[in-house]
Image 1 (cartoon, rainbow, N blue to C red):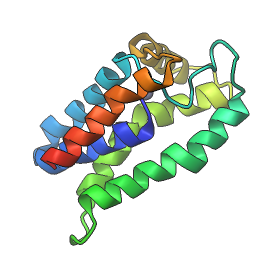
Image 2 (tube, protein in one colour):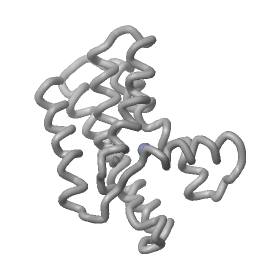
Image 3 (cartoon, protein in one colour):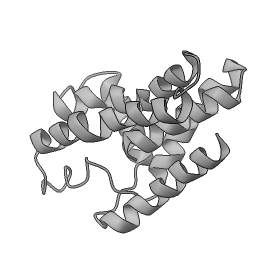
Image 4 (tube, protein in one colour):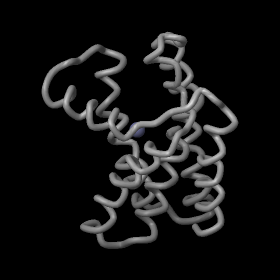
Length: 148
Ligand SMILES: [Zn+2]
């Protein structure tokens, strides 16, 4: 999924569940669960080589990634006192993608990056249909906004 959906999910779980023994594995599991749902993200088209790595990289760095930071701020920090909790949740939720980053963009093909990328790929289901692929993510974001 997009970083905005993953990041908000992590921030949401982290702020709702105080015990990190529960929240940390739940945040990581939520990432893979969200990736399992057929979705559209900026990486769509990379495996079929419809999109270049450069285009995906710049889309992610200039849209999705900063938007995930802005939304976590808006949902969990706006007019509230600063807390690290939503940001730690945001980071953990994006960790599987951070780990996969050198595999996709730097061609790292060694242990443990290669094995972790294979696990990620196993759970990942994408769709080239933008609207259909964005709907579950909009639903996730709306639910988080409602229940935060
Ligand atoms: Zn992922």
